[in-house]
Each structure stands twice: as structure tokens, then as C-alpha cells.
Length: 160
Figure (cartoon, rainbow, N blue to C red):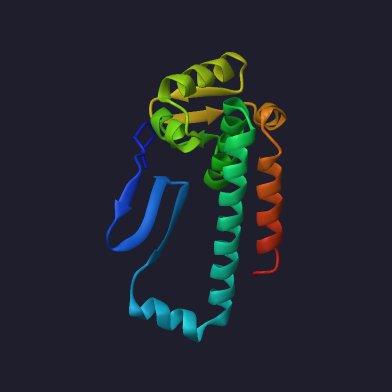
């Protein structure tokens, strides 16, 4: 995706997929050949089972996080999570998509991002966010970031 291009949530009828940005997507193809692959390759089945378990654990943690933690803490958590997935300091996510992900209105999220930018944590660009101070975001994030990251790491540790 070229820098500055907008990332919009998208749905594909050919696949069960929800895409928030190029670095955050979940899905699987709908087809009988896919079922045959799962039946004939137990390792693939184990990997997918671990992925789905991790995804459901992350979903439950997110539900608790949304109830218990401030918008600022949740925003820092998701910025760190997106950076982990993107493996880049540039996150291809719009402020609108981030607001949807956080469950906060776009004006509130824009004000929060402006505060984080003023504090030197990030820089906003059209259609993307640049992380400048990952350690600062970690300090302001809730414990949910570490919990989900560590749980995922332990799930996938023995897959190779």
C-alpha cells in the first residue's frame, strides 16, 4: 500500500475476512479444498486452532479492557499492537479506523492523538500514524497489551 493511502474496513464475500488495515486482518477462504487441507495436514489444523484460541482470548481481553481502561490507555495499547503486526514505525491506519477500533468518537480520538503527538509519542500523517516513542506508549498503555502479547508468544512458540 502506498504511503498516505487510506485503509478502510472491507468485507469480501469470497472469504470470511474483516480487514482493518494491511497489518490487521482475520479470515479464511470458504471452500472444500481448504477443508481437505485441514483434514490432511494436522499441523495446519493445530496452527489454526492456536490462532483461533489466541484470537478469542484477545477478544475477551479487549471486552474487559474496553470496560475498565481509559481511552488513552486503550489507544496506546492498540497502537503498540498494530505496530507489532506492521513491523514498522509507520502504521497504515486512519484516525477514523482507529476511532472505530477503540469504540470512541473520531473527535475524541483526534484530540487524544494530538495530545500524544504533542508529547512526542507519534506523528500523524494522512492515512497513517508514525510511532516515535514506543517505550512512552508502553508506559501509558494498560496491562492488556503485555498480557495479550505474552499469551500469543507462548501459543506460537512451538509451531515451527
